[in-house]
Amino acid sequence: MENTYPPTDTTEHVLDDIEYTYLQARGSLRFTNWIVDRLVFFGLWRLLLYFFTYPLARFLVAHRIESRGLFLLFFFCLAILVFVAYFTVFEAATGGKTPGKFITRTRAVTADGFRITVRTALLRSLCRVIPLEAFSALGNPSYPWHDRLTKTLVVDEKLTQLPPWD
Image 1 (cartoon, rainbow, N blue to C red):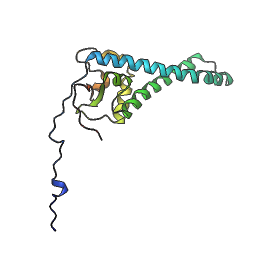
Image 2: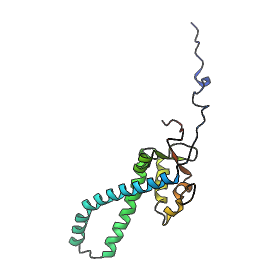
Image 3: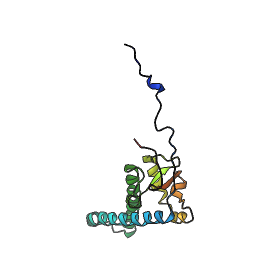
Image 4: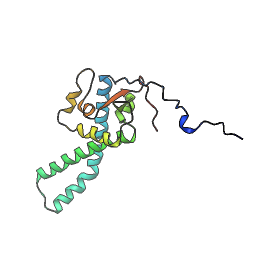
């Protein structure tokens, strides 16, 4: 009996000829993302402070560390670390989504529409720590530094046709 199946290298890919369209999310959706993400972050931050402030204060008293500046510096660095971790973990684990983006049905993608990597999510998060970075989102269309510097954009999933992700 003769093999009638074509070799695997000549089969055509069904999804190759589909064109994908990307519509950048409106400024109002981006602002809603910003508000929701800040509320969730501050809620998590309050929980973290509740569980760590008392043990840390006992540690500082036990070791006779009375420097208020050192205490504030520690919490400032911890806040930045938690802030970066919050956005990195959410965006890396969910393919570019945060709680705010879940609510508004938006997503961060690369400039060519693909899922962002952990590295890109981390870079986006670090860019958010730049002083006055939030003001870079003003304008129409909204294109803040954490998008510009990482070559990403936030798209409206309701109006965008994205490629399938593995």
